Length: 267
Image 1 (cartoon, one colour):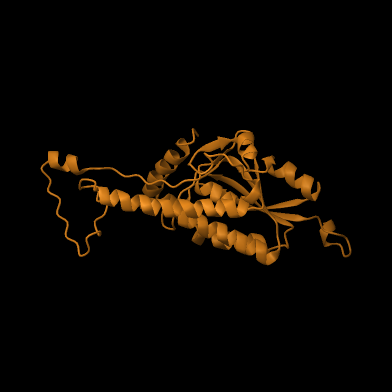
Image 2 (tube, one colour; image 1 turned 90 degrees about the vertical axis):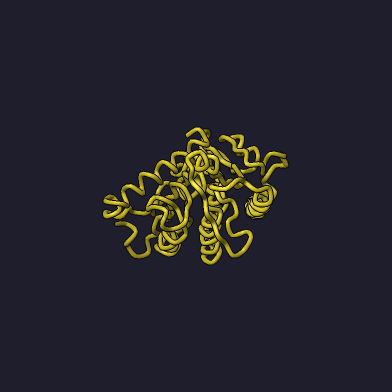
């Protein structure tokens, strides 16, 4: 009750935004991270209660480059508008798009076993043209525009399609690199593997400049803002109706995809 007594200074407040899961466009399931779903949460975390800082508690193997950019840009925009420092705390993993989110913070803190990095872009699919041929299935495709059926999984892969895809991936990769360099600046090492998609654990990530140190959320925030600091959590609530019907099936499929993403990092 002390904080309501006139002329008595209130303890500092830190908003804690939980960013857990893969990053994907809206409509890909209630558990995925995307700008549309997180916007109200992030806005509230920066505006409510005059926070002394905003902490990002991150556990994400990555996902959509666009959504990673949108979320990170929203965090930076509000931080700059409000003059509020942002600190990121990595749990199991902040890799690929997850690391992009971490870069929205002014400081990045990791556990000794946290995985960080994977600064790269990936796409994957299957080639099914031989499968349908063996089963007597004829593929019929009609387009207006010679590139409209690019990378059709039911047709043989074309060198020109692969060349164009690599160009697109290269552009996205460069945007990722530019974001990391702009946010981490001189803290980054000159390691030649830094932007190859490689990832690292704990102290090695710190040594490479991908993180600022080993530290956990509560102890670090108490060290920074005092023992009486008040942490206010902000996390998404799963709608009750999402547990039923077709949504349940969709969530199960997306859950398998998410497990595959985490498995890439041995998690």
